[in-house]
Structure formats: structure tokens, C-alpha cells
Image 1 (tube, rainbow, N blue to C red):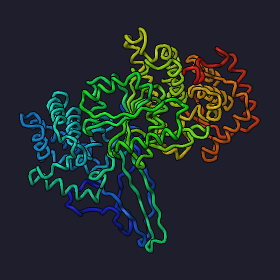
Image 2 (cartoon, rainbow, N blue to C red; image 1 turned 45 degrees about the horizontal axis):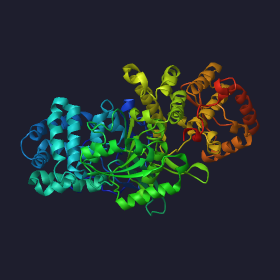
Image 3 (cartoon, rainbow, N blue to C red; image 1 turned 135 degrees about the horizontal axis):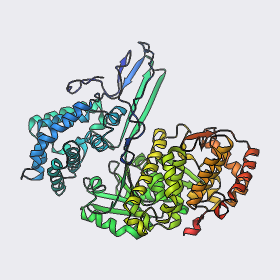
Image 4 (cartoon, helix red, strand yellow; image 1 turned 90 degrees about the horizontal axis):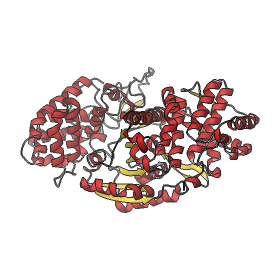
Length: 636
């Protein structure tokens, strides 16, 4: 569809309307989109264009049901509209009148009316939108939320205008918008939706907004009555004339942002405040150990910003990763009155990320959440992961859902209080991404991995004052995160099993819990065994295999554990994994080092003989292939 002039209410396609004959044209694609600032790229392949096969023309007797009518993306026109609106609003926000009066004048300015209504009609989660703004991810993030301007709190729109000003006009132009946003946030009605101001607007502006809202009710109801501003749906439904046969393709689009940050709990850092100040409150689920260490800082942060802060403290131990604790979180959220439009805040490591994220997925069928990662496992794996879960009946992650956070924040400063064993086992998740997706990251781990473990990623000792090493640590974390989302986000619901990030997770799930190993050590054993199998399959060279095993060993992770002597148990794990993976083993292995391949055939007798040969190989490594503090009991 080309760009069309503003349409009057009722014009264009009708939501759920039926038309016979061929399709009306290109639909806005519904695809998973991520803003991963650390990766400096729009995730899920947003930088590329999706090619579609030509569709055969349907019979004129068949019916096509169209759900949404969105404008085409024209980056130059969008940018010009934003620049003009910000330029005109800049004089208004700097006036001496009350913040509420300034907001009304900003909303009444014709160029602002035009820009806001224009953005509200865009497919902001589409590949086209991501591709158009891939060189400015912060602008893309702001535009994604501006689409919902009519239904967001007034102070949230003020924050978004501040962000737009920074991106299109620079820091000097942002200043008045920042002051305006801060002043408006102190007013009594700043949490009210923008639409509640309609009666106070001049007639011309009011009519323009109301006509746009009526149009959007049928063209794209997400923009005017969203359940959540982070999620959209679409579908293509076809039916025969007598409706005896109906075919439909349905899709859900989710947007998420990932930030690698420092000093998140410093009151001058607005990452969390910009999310929760407009909502007026923050409901949080916090790991009990994190509360003991950082609870006062969290309290002080939200108090400083005048945000009502309610917290529920839960255990972050693996033994408590149970469905009963998920239910406990659900009951707490119901008692507090958690809304589906306000993101829950989850603060903790991998276990809390899993159980609180799972609770958010279940609560009212879908509730957004922000993940503040305090451990290395959460920071580069479980935190941004769409896979949320809990254990059950002695099975790892038996229950679960696909529900990524809308914002993931990784701050290495939290890692300084981790038990060394907890930090060490998390390094396995970095190594797996290096082996499978990024040779440059692997080389960084070869050179710096041991020092990262020793210094808790630059949070202890003299390394704190070493700016070069600090940058190395951030680079390692960022590359690991980028590799993870590159592997995960294009296959959000595991609709296929070519999943590089499952390296180290094929055989170990069957023996991790009975062994009592920390997750990272169990993954280490499986990665090592996988590297040996990759050598046998001619996927990698012997040198590459030993490089892989050495990195695992140098980071003091496990290569071999006595539980692997029970070959029958390992075989049962493989059988269970084939069942889980849709009838295929599809074991991710390096092919070559830094790239992904898959092993799909491994007979029982081969598995048993390979385990024994791998054991002999591991005995030649330090500690006989064993890890340091490899069991959960070793770290409390």
C-alpha cells in the first residue's frame, strides 16, 4: 500500500471486513523485532528485507478477511515530520506557564498533531520500520512507543518527546524538553492518559485526534486501545464462499529492548524511572539475596523519583524453581492489582528470571515485565530469554512459556557480590555463544576468560581502575548477548530445532539435577563432549577441539563428571531430547569453531563408546577435567 492522505472515519479497510477476489496489496508484516543497543543492530534480521513468493490468485468465490490497514513506511517523511514537530514544540516547552498548560499547547500545535497521528498509523514493529531506522536504534525505540501516544500517560509522552528531541536535534534542543518532562511528572494528573485531555484541547486539535482515534478503531486498534504497548497481533484469514473451509495464519509481534548499562541504581540513571514514573508505581519481584544486598539502594532509587514501590521477595535457589513458587507470585500480583499495561519489575538471577517471567506469562494470559539482571546467567542468557519456566517432578524446566521481557538491563556492577562459584558457572553461557556464533568472542575468552572469572568481570581488585579491561568486559558481555539474541529471537517459539544456543544442552539436562551440579558446570560437560563429537564428525579440527576444551577448563568449569559413567542414563537423556525436539536429535555442535552445525544421528553403542573415549581425554586436563566448586552445595 502506498502512502495515502489522511482518511476520514470509516475510510479504508474495515477491521475484520471481508473482500472477495485478490489481496489488496502488501500487508504490514507481523514479525518479532528487538532493539538491542549493545549489538548495534536491529534484531531478528530487521536489517534485511523479507522476500515473499508470489501468491496464486484466489478464486473470486473465496473471501479474504483483512484485519488492519497500516500506512507504508517512508523514513524521510517520518523524520521530516518529527523534526518539524520538535522544532515547533521546542519554543512551547520552554515557556513559563504551568506544565499542564504547556502540554495542552504542545498537543495543539498543528505539526505535532500531524506527526503524532502519522506515527500512530505506522507498522512500527515491522521489518520495514526496523530497516528504515536501523542506524538510530534510540529513535526507533521512541517511535515504537509514540505510536500509542493517545493511550500512554502524559508524562510518558513528555519523556518520548525529550528522546525524540535528543535524536533529531541534539542535546541542546533536548534541554527544554527534559525540564518540561521533569516538571510535568510532578503534577497530579501526569499519570492520566493523553486521551483524557481531549475536552481541554482547542476544537481543531480535538477533532483531529478524535477522528484519528475513530479511524484507528478499525484500521489498527492497537494504537488506540492497546492492552500493552509492547505486543501486537495480525492474521490472514481465507474462507470459501459458503464458509465450509477456513484457512488462517495468525501471528504475534513482540518488541523488546536490551541495554548493557552501568550504575543502574544511581538516581541520575533514568532507565527504570522513565518506565515507572509515568505509571506512578512499580511492582517488583526480587531475589531474596539481592534484597539483602541491594534492597536499600532499590528503595532509595524509587523514593528519589517519587515512585510508589511495592516488592515481593522470593527465593532464587534452584531447589525453589518450583510451580508452587510461580503460583505464589501469581497470587501476590492478584492481591496487589497488577495491570496488563504496566510492566512488572523482576530483579535477580536466572532462577528468578525464569519463575517470575513464567508468572508474568500466565498472569491474565500475558503481562509485560522488565528484567534487571543481577547475575551473569541472567545477564547474558536467562534474562533476555523468551523461554520462562520452572522445574517439576524432578524434570528440568518441565513447565514453561515463551514470554521475553520488554526491557532487559544488564549491569556488571551487581556481579561483584556474587559468590565466585555462581559467577564462574555463568561463564558457560558466554562460551557456548562464542563456540557456536562468534569466533572473535571466542578469541576474547581465550585471552581474557580466566581474568574475567578471577576479577568477577572487572568488579574486584585493581581491574576496577583499568579502563581498557572494563571495555573488554563490556565487549564480551555485549557480544555474548548479541550472539544469543541472534540465535534465539528469530525462533522465538522454537518452531524449528536449529538452535545454536542449545549447545551444551543436549545430554546434560538428563543428569544435571541428579548430579547436583550447577547449571554452568553441567553445560560445560556437555559442551566438551559436543566438541569431541564435532571432531569425530569432521566438523572441527583436533586443534579446534582442544582450544574449546581448554577455554572451558581455564574458566574452571567441568569437562567431565562421574555421573556420566552411567551411559544408560545419558542415553535416556538423548531419547528424551529427541522426543522434545520433534523427533530429531539436532544436537548443536561447532562447524567449524565459531559457526553452527548439527548432529542428528548417534546410536546407543556409539554414544557409550564415545563417552568412555571422552573421559580418557578429559583426564589429561587440569583437575582431571573436574570443575571448581561444581556442585550447588559448594556455593551454598
